[in-house]
Amino acid sequence: MQEMIQKIADPELRAQVNRVVSFHGYLSTGAFVGIQMLNLARRVLNVSKEERLFVICETYNCLPDPFQVLAGCTIGNKGLTIRDYGKMAATVSLRGPPGGLVKAVRITLDPAKTVRYPRLHDWFMNTCKVPHSEAVSLLLEAKENVYTWERLDLEVPVKPAKVIRLCESCGESFTMRESSALCQTCLDASVLKSHPSSTSSLAEDFRCPQS
Image (cartoon, rainbow, N blue to C red; front, side):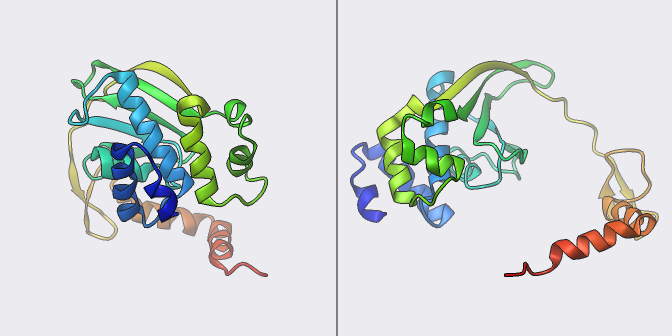
């Protein structure tokens, strides 16, 4: 993989890859998709690298990391939202005033386009094992030709007032998001007590898989 990275002709892209590798641990195909999506979003939205971005990633797997290390979009600074729909898709938007509209773009890795690159398509559809080095090489060759994007106008959410309460069950402080007098931990525990089958279901989930 390192040999393949050194062959990347664009020095800026190569530097991005090296930063992502140091953060992610290795260059996965999904992480490289994230790099390409970020660069595509910046081009479509016509923004500089210094401009603050917000991103919604539609999978937990690999895709969010380039946005964190290269664009500073993290969960902690509210720049990154993950909605785990299991899709290789991301929506990137600009900063704007609460309640206002901002320019955004939703980008997807498009199976109707990856099919032109059979081995990349095999990786995408998980029909057979394809090494990351091979899949990334094909993404380098394909460039933006395997992505579909749509320009959007998104409404910037209004930040709700922060209300801190003491949980009536455990006594710990929590940020109240609804009118409940219980924190989410105690609410979840009460649901499990009310529905014992949920407890057994959770126990099943935590069992080691059988070979």
